[in-house]
Length: 432
Image (spheres, rainbow, N blue to C red):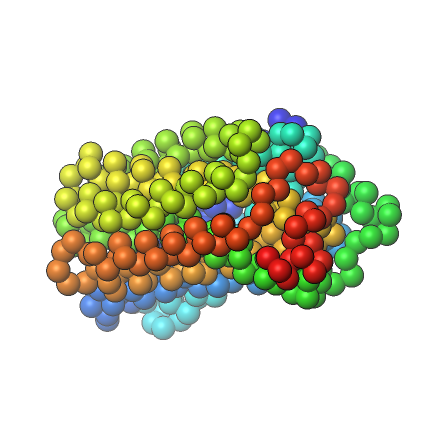
């Protein structure tokens, strides 16, 4: 289990590194380099729009790779998604700027970001099922927490490279070529991830389905027919987590550097330390879900998010590193209380034959509302007087949505992963 869980963690870390390095670049440099004719605000909005394209592509990736995972096995998903995301990320680092090729530059960014999103949309489902379908029933929460440690590790690696480069290079060097180096490094990381995953075995759940001839013929159609309400509920439930993370890791970077005048190095350091603490708390929250249940943990995290969004914005607006860090940390504790749990929670909500598709589609649809839209909305709402209370109101509203959706979902601990959860399968899913 440790070897399998480590492989799932490494894969998600590499793929989320690819995804996050783009978000940091969008906040710091992509606006003036690829949208030079725009005002600073419009350039940032345009850069965040290309960032958001990846989130809109992720549900499509979950459909494509979910079909592969439910029809042909979880293992092929782990390889295909890693190759696609790594290749697209390296290519982003090679795109000439607007001054060199004109409008083809931002169009190339959009296309490559779309491919990134498709790859990442498939990665999460394969990685969490690798861990949870091998895990013993009483410890699925703990082992499912391993792939959830991948995103903070990927974020720290991506932003650590950006921080090192921005601190050691001149501003001209960083804008000229330094920002490209983290994208090029994705190729080496992807190669290492493929090597690590080369010896992985297929999960017992899928082997059992295959031997019994019970694989879904059209997983997407089955999910849409029998579980569409469940997909919408899980998407709404997870939206706040995405909104919190990307408001902290992406919008706050742009707001702090452009509106408050805090250096990029200080902003990155505040966010990175908070994310590091969040990553360290992930296995603790995952372990607790095996003790107290999945749903109570998710409700607690969502409730904390509801009450903390206004203090978060107030602390950010001070520009004081310690206070900003405190705001980020509590917000990310709310985030991890939910997202450490969902790697076990979401698969338990779906029957094994459509689990790769259903769990991944719900997870990635949440990213459209929380991840794609929030940096754009927050940037627009923060224009004008300070503090940007409109951003706090937006985040609070999304957190209330998530709290309500979790309240409508059932508890799943500790049913076996050998079958669907009675409360949400078949006709019962429609009632949920």
